[in-house]
Image (tube, rainbow, N blue to C red):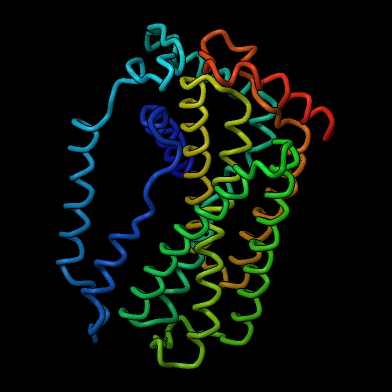
Length: 334
C-alpha cells in the first residue's frame, strides 16, 4: 500500500515536470561535497554540514525553475517552427489522458523494465553502509555518481549512433550492450558477497585501505553505470512511441511513478530481513526479466518516428525530406 501511494504521487509529480526534462540530476556534486567533508571522518555520524549543503542545493532548484524555464509554447527551432501545438486542456481532460496510458499494451509490456530501473542504488547503498566506514562510503557514493555521468555519455553515443542507420537496430544493439554490463555486475556482486559474509550485529566497517574494498569498488563503478544506462534505455524505448511533447511528459510521469514503486519494493526486501544474497537475487531477477522485455520491445515497437501521424507535432523543415528515407532504412533492417 505504501509503495503504491508513493508510485501514484511520483507519477503525478513527474508528469508536471517531465515536459521539461525526462531525467534528473543524480547528485554528483552533492556526493563530492559529502566526500570532502567526510575525508578525515573517524566516527559513524554524518556531519550536520552535509545536510545543510544538500538542503541549500535542493532549494536552489526552485529559483532555477522559477526564472530559468521558458514556456514550451514559446520554444522555437532555428528555422522558426514550433516544437508542437499546445492546445489548452483542463484538469479533468488531463486526468483522463493519464488514465488512457494504461490502455497501451506497449507500456504494460514495459512495466517490469520501468519497475527495475533504479533498484541498483538501493542494493549498493545498503551494502555500502553495512560494510564500510564513513569516508569509504562517501568515496563509493561519489564514484557511483561519477560513473552515472560516464554511463550517460556512453549510452547517448550508443543510442544516437548514426553509423547504425536503423533506429530499431540501434535499440537492439544497445539493449545487448546494456545486458552485458548489468549481468556482469550482478554476478560479480553475488561472488563478492559469498567471499565476504557479514554479521549484521558486528559489521566490518572496512576502510579503503582494507582488502575487500578493491572488489567492491569495481562493482560499485559497474552499478553506477547500470543505474543510468538501464534507465535511459527504458526511457528511450518508451519515448520512441510518440513525438508529442505533452504525451512524452505523461510518459515521463508514468516511468518515474513505476520506477518509484520499484525502489520502494527494493527497500521492502531490505526491511523484510532478507539476507543480502536474497536481496541481490530478487533485484537481479527483475532486471534480467526487464532486459528480455526491452529487447523484444526495441525490435518490434521502435520505429523511425511517429511525427507524421501526430497532428500536434510540428516537423522541422529540414527533417521533412528525410523522414521517408529513414523509414525505408528501418523497413529494410526489419
